[in-house]
Length: 347
View 1 (tube, helix red, strand yellow):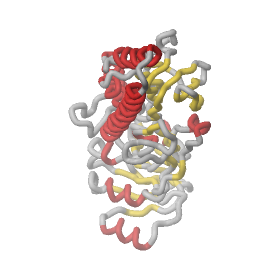
View 2 (cartoon, rainbow, N blue to C red; view 1 turned 180 degrees about the horizontal axis):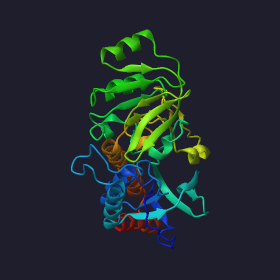
View 3 (tube, rainbow, N blue to C red; view 1 turned 30 degrees about the vertical axis):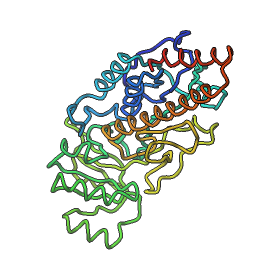
View 4 (tube, rainbow, N blue to C red; view 1 turned 180 degrees about the vertical axis):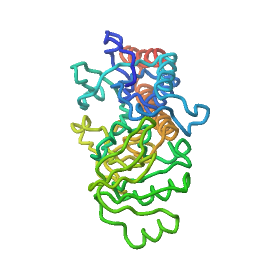
């Protein structure tokens, strides 16, 4: 588990923020960094349970290839802090709309007020019930060929059928190894067309449900079928069902829905990360289950830029309205408040 700095709630951290970022992974921290650099008041709430915690390193990320997830996240937190962002350890229980924007309540009762919300809580992998599989998850039980293919190249790979993308997954892993076997497990046998495609790539189909993994001193040594047959394998690839961490958004009427690809649930959004709820954006795996660390971070930055633009438009509209008012002592005072507010935000 990643160790997250525990920030005790004070009068400072309990104030109203322009943006609250829920989730402190790559998407959330990159979004918070961009917003902090834009001189916005930002707070990141993170439970400290990232999806990639079991992995030994982050892969496919330019300039940070192989960096441990813990190290990458700590660097990100430090960069957010260095630019004035706040970090709070905790888990969000609910988000409700109020007169100031949004009221965010943590499970421990703490509350935070914010004008905009960026949700980057990621997803939960629902692993198949195979004895020994969960203990090897993130090591020699893997899911993404682009994340892990290089590390398991040229080894004996088994692909456990768990969903509609499993045949495609087997064909992908064939790119990294000549020795790939497809275990149909509890799903219906592949179609004749899929069997033909797999066979053309030299991938043997093993029928029957899988019972457990054989594990030796060096890791997985085989896949045991129900009935006792053991097929020698060193790596097992699976496609877990992925479920967005979004239950706390229910009060806003925003819920995760079934993904069109049949791989689990996600929170729909447009290309900017904007959801159907005004003022709420999403980024990373919570809305794009297939996003690796790099694309997730980029999505966080993209959503943050849109949030900042939205805030700029709101501030400009207020300033124009104030400028159009007849000059009175009261309107002058309101104008001063707008200027002072923007000055405090560094604008």
